Length: 212
Image (cartoon, rainbow, N blue to C red; front, side):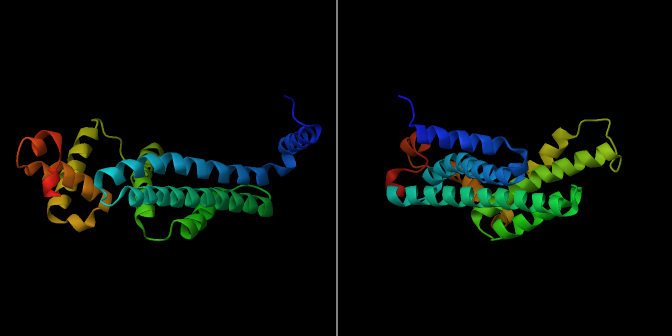
């Protein structure tokens, strides 16, 4: 069934507006908000679902509420960050008449300060995710620019060994320094595997129903 003429006219007007370059920066900010919201849901919902049902106690209603809250917070913050970053970046470029590398840093700096500055579990996870990747990227950039030496041998295996050695040492002797979800994962792997009472909680359950 064909759409009503009024709706067709509206869609044509909207499509015409979207194709006009003069509004591209403003429309890109709106599209960025949309993409941030969608991506936040895609990333957080599966993670929150798995972590909540694996490690969180409480009723089904409480677990679902926790999943929805975490997903909403991540999606909202990311959408608002993309909106803020793209808006500030476009504003700086418009004011100065050209784009500079510093515009990118300043726009993201302000957006991060406003949207991800609160110290909570979700922001901590996002920041740690970014920290590891930024450090990797900076090392590669340093080698590319000649600030860091290029090693003849591949040090990936050594790097891996050091990281795993450090994380288990921190877990065993300085556990509070690790992020809570990492503590939960490592407790399940390395401590809960030391405890059982019979075949049921040795192979089937992590902990027997009677021990919960």
